[in-house]
Amino acid sequence: DVKVTQSSRYLVKRTGEKVFLECVQDMDHENMFWYRQDPGLGLRLIYFSYDVKMKEKGDIPEGYSVSREKKERFSLILESASTNQTSMYLCASSPDTSSYNSPLHFGNGTRLTVT
Amino acid sequence: RKEVEQDPGPFNVPEGATVAFNCTYSNSASQSFFWYRQDCRKEPKLLMSVYSSGNEDGRFTAQLNRASQYISLLIRDSKLSDSATYLCVVNLVRDNYGQNFVFGPGTRLSVLP
Image 1 (tube, rainbow over the protein chains, first blue to last red):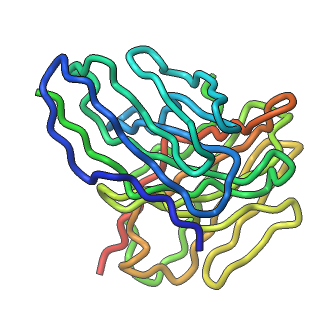
Image 2 (cartoon, chains in turn orange, cyan; image 1 turned 180 degrees about the vertical axis):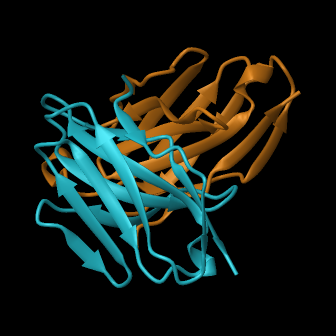
């Protein structure tokens, strides 16, 4: 089974802090994604990466950056946390483009609260 | 128009009922389709992929109509444990790289004893 591991289930941070959310997958997947999920807004794509050191903006990249130094690890960075970034953050991975019938595999999520 | 739309719900049904969820998508170039379920405060988990010929997995049947850009999920003999939010997901492979998974807003199902 594919395993996608997010480093923290719950995080509480203060406004202005720099926050790192880590995600590791063990299936050698090329594609990795960061989403946030908010009530009434569904899942929204923040950033994705289709290869090491490659990254692309999703629908809501403002206030976030990402890092993918190794294939298995995709980090989401909140440069200066704000209260409107309080949310559930979900990391996901999928195989390469040629396997477009392959689904997303999610980590168990990080619930971030910014006070 | 939203890229992926679903029945607004919630659906409240008795145990043993049959329930159907509908989903429409706007991009005719979409290439793969999935149903996920999401329990409260948990991550989405793959329920089933949706194939053009339709497919079944136990009590669950998924259908795809590419001409109408419509996907459905049928749950027969519903169980209390089926209570969850069901997400319709459409994948469009981007030019030359990556994938673009677009999520519907979800339909909440409550199966009542």
